[in-house]
Image 1 (cartoon, rainbow, N blue to C red):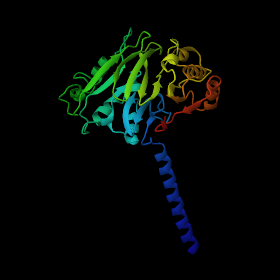
Image 2 (cartoon, rainbow, N blue to C red):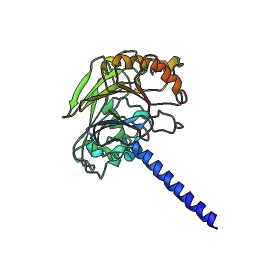
Image 3 (cartoon, rainbow, N blue to C red):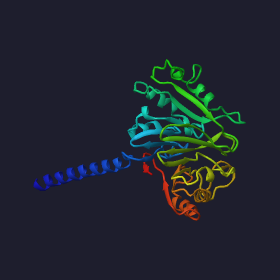
Image 4 (cartoon, one colour):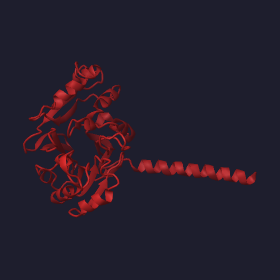
Amino acid sequence: MMHTHIRTILCRLACFTLVVICSTAYTNEQCGDKGVWIQILGAGGEELNDNQASSSYLVWLNNEARVLIDTGPGSSVGFDKSGANFESLDAIVYTQLRADHSSDLPAYILGSYGLSRSEPLTIFGPDKGQTNYPGTIEFIQRLIGPNGAYPKLADSLTYKSMSGYKIRPREVPSTGSRVWSRFGTENLRLSSIPVGHSDFPTVAWRVDIDGFSIVFTGDFNNQKNQIAKFAKNTDALVVTHAIPEVSRGTLRNSYVLPSQIGRIAKQANARMVVLGHRTNRTKGRESQSRSSIEGHYTDDIIFADDLECWGL
């Protein structure tokens, strides 16, 4: 009986220790109270079997969430887990409007009802360019406009919004080579530039915040060769890592290879590279991808996972 009692006590102590260790590990993934941090809300792609939310990132400054980049499926759950306050966001920006980058937007809007936000929220994204795809303003109207998929959210586009704030959709150019930069606050400036991603309107974003910079490339094929200059001397280059080095054909028309990521990071003199939008095509090939990148770039390389947070 005594031996059984001792085993029971030891088992309970072991379980308690495991809970503490797991809790500590989870806490360590959260962002620090001071400075600029990048949190990954969704590190995956469009696949249902990759065990990650789809593309989404959060930029923090001094323990306040300031910019949300893309709202891929599952990212709103990550936002909740992150402890971020929707009220502190200065803007939501989109690299593109495909479902794997945008489909959680209604969840964010509906979920913000009942919060204390009163300031208008600007949502930036690409215009339609020369394509038949909708630009950001039309996209949001189709989604939450009076005749959209979620018409009960339509009042959020007006000053009579039940949510307490108004959504202001704005478009940035998705064609050409000029940098757009028309939004800023005391500590923040947003810039964008068109990038090539098959035939879909896509832009990259640069977030300059409190003396640091982060570039989010979104999905791109680098045929325009513009990212290196746009990201010059950035503190963090957050890049889509959707295809392995051996990829050929149509995938090459949409995404950069790991070796190209290395060249771009070196030319940009980026302080670190964060590989997001990780797909099943690249998982399990991390060592090969790292080797291809390090053939050109030898600073910090991070393979992103959901809810990780990286300080600048």
